[in-house]
Length: 288
Image (cartoon, rainbow, N blue to C red; front, side):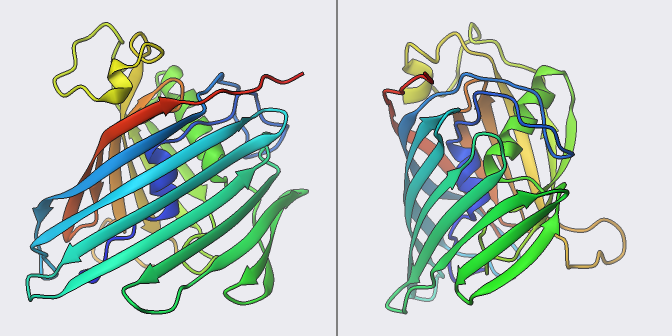
């Protein structure tokens, strides 16, 4: 953990997510409609706010540039790049460059992804694949890092489905939500158990102690948002003496149009904060 802090794909999607604008088709992993949501570009500034434990670090900084576009007709495209630098405190800096491009069908039926990570001068580690719902299962075909085909439980959700479920749960007044999530990160085969804790709604009329470009935007000022914390657990790890420790947890304020602010990423040994530096609304073509 002390060598880098490339944020997992699912966390990045959360940090600036714009989700589905229509309901899902029938199936065990589907939720109700909650649109419309916003096409946009956002820039996040990352910095170290806490370091602890045996793998403590002395400094970390970075940036995330995220673009979201699409519609319920054509599906949703997410692109981001994260460049980060970590100081181990031993005179050694680690630079990571993470790039991702994904497309998800608006009905949650298929998901395509390409992820590329570079660490210092090492060769890139690409992941390329697609997942498709077939009956009550999900069929995944990987091209990289190794050509492989396998199946997942049909109850597993994709990234935009995950956001859809959280917003739907928040609107229903629920405070806890458990989901299994697949986004193609790690080696392309990983599924995480997630636990989302949703706080009380924050009306758009309430004053904000730390405003940012999102809260200053005219399309955002009147929107309700919710404080959310999502913890990610390794499904393959066995809990030792009680509750299992999450691989990481992410806290943020989620607007009803899918945009999030005030990010806090807890990796157990250190904590990273992500403040929104820029926010631009993009044009979106309505469905015909």
